[in-house]
Length: 239
Length: 239
Image 1 (tube, each protein chain N blue to C red):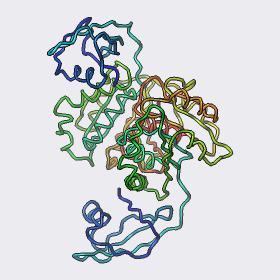
Image 2: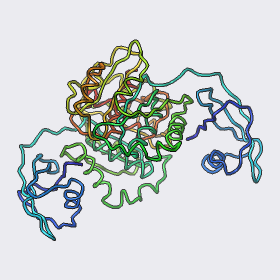
Image 3: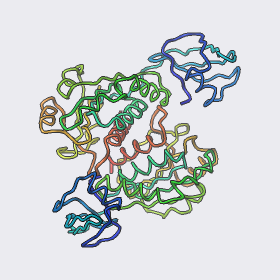
Image 4: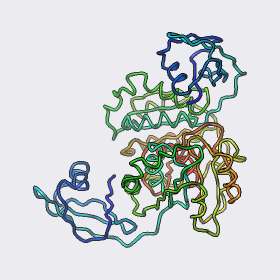
């Protein structure tokens, strides 16, 4: 990452040399005294930070901020069945980079309930991953992320949008190829992606009852994280 | 993977219990005596294998093969600037799963020459990754993969196709969005993806002289492996 996100818009900052951001700036970006690098404020403007002083214990930075840009999300709300933590990490990393607006993870009938007690979810790791994904994209807008009990509670939590397109990815019962009906502009795509072992019959019915069209990404069997990135690539190309 | 690829079409096999395929079948897939699981022959038919005997040292399988299916590749030849081995691993894994037909990796002006001496390339690891990617997809057709000195030698090695579309992904000098001109059917897309640090001026010129149109995937800065999967997603949706 060559962009560093700050939680608040400040004009100056003093960080300990051991602060992870200081370590990143000095050791990875090799910033020297007087050098300027890219910063942004979470959900705020992009800007430049200048290394003003560099001592044995602290460094000091000054910041200049641009005017706030428009939100650059993809119009996508992602519903993802809880998969192995390693899979969810890749989805958070890459989905945040690609511009997902909302992540909703949920327990599935065929998934392992224990996945929800991974350090990914019980510590701040998920937030850190989202922030790094946004930094990688050179953006500042942070997607939201919620963990739900099951598909039913996600569906109850979705804010209703006027022109949303609801699609559920399904290798087995998908009736058309994902991407074929995306030509007209939509406000949001609510994209549901099953867990590693696929949807149960109940979950498929729940999706259909809630207006989700089941579609597939072709014959080849993709890992969940690959399917997510491939589908977001398609949405990016048409949005 | 629930499909196991064999190098040759045989009707029976006797494997040591410590053979990685035997370990996979017994410990991951939990196959018992008399059970049938999915097999395929590299570049050959899909079929079923039945566990006929299970001893202390060996197991024996019998196979039934279907007729050979059509090749299910995406019409894509991928040209990728050598990036960190960890990045190339993800590209091999996911590109093989998604159906890339040819991989051409090459040294770039801004890349590290040392990347080519990673165990990924000096051992059979790259072949194993490709095979596992194909198994994941439930396919049997193996993409080819070559490592080249530089972009010039890749371009000299490409077999000329009548209707190929040449596209180079480029965040900086891409003049249109990737995916916008993919509606007419093409024989092959030759897709060049830069290394982590981007193309040099010489490489950009070489691409343009060889008929590559420079396109981008939007404003957000993606990792190389994310860009590859997103672009393959788009190609899959239109092919």
